[in-house]
Image 1 (cartoon, helix red, strand yellow):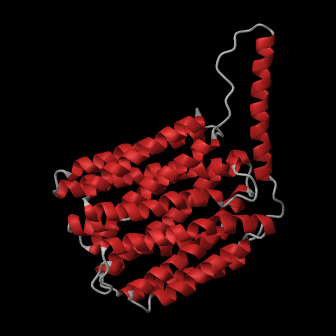
Image 2 (cartoon, rainbow, N blue to C red; image 1 turned 180 degrees about the horizontal axis):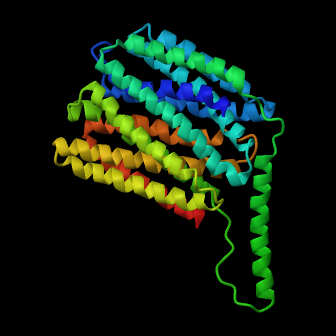
Image 3 (cartoon, rainbow, N blue to C red; image 1 turned 90 degrees about the vertical axis):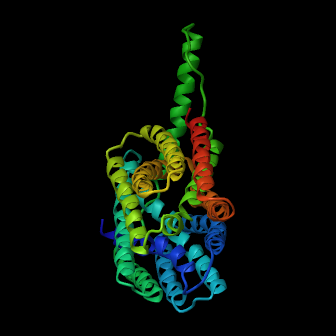
Length: 400
């Protein structure tokens, strides 16, 4: 597992950055607005979409995966260094968009490295182990943000720390990451999926030919519904979580250090979810796990909107509990969908998973802050919960 050290350090940096960035933009240092936060993150996510597919195609085409991991970590480190030296909102948006483009360069290669290192039977456990480790790194990053906010570190210092963590991640990956000697497992998983479908068809045909009663119908998985479900889930997630730090900071009047503490709890819930998912090794368990986790997040988002009607100390406590449960549900969703994607996506399209997540995420990062600024966070929570339920229906169609 030494090859995961670089990814662990990278996630530490982005865990810190995820909460720090919106607070930094609206701080007196930059004097940005909630809409600026939405534009920055939405533009970055939109620009990353075509590059998600491009990097995924390129790494499969060349068979070189380590190179793209190193490219991503090194350029992020350099760009964050320049990010720390300016407070101009337009330049910050440009730099952050560039960071997003090179950030996705390691996503598809990472998924392939895991998929080709283990058999299909072990994919869910392997993805869960990876996500557990990197989520722990994310959690440590948020904890670092808590202490830096508590002791009044400057924004430029925090950004330099994020830059340094990515540079160290580059060197760790250069030493420990290696390309797989053969690329076979995804192809074998696709063949097994096709053969299983053919076997079911032949069995039903023979039973009908022998005059036996045939229960059920032969249905292939509707992959288009799976794609739609991914987009809707990502839309609801980013719509909810992009402006959420500002909700805790502005609407609930929490200090910056306490905002970080709230998201430490969310990350802790995700860690518990990944730990739980490691025991879910059966190949078909992922479909049911996806639907349950999405429905849970939809219900939790709607509960958050109900809690907002009575703003008090209890609102913060209820919101924290909801975020812990949301983190747990997200972990189950991500592990299952990563495994399914490596099975249903053909070689050369490893980046399509990140493209679909990016499409929904880009729309959500823009819509969420705009709805919050134009209406209220109550509308954000209700809309997000509704979209989660629509995502659940799409996955239900896919897996029926």
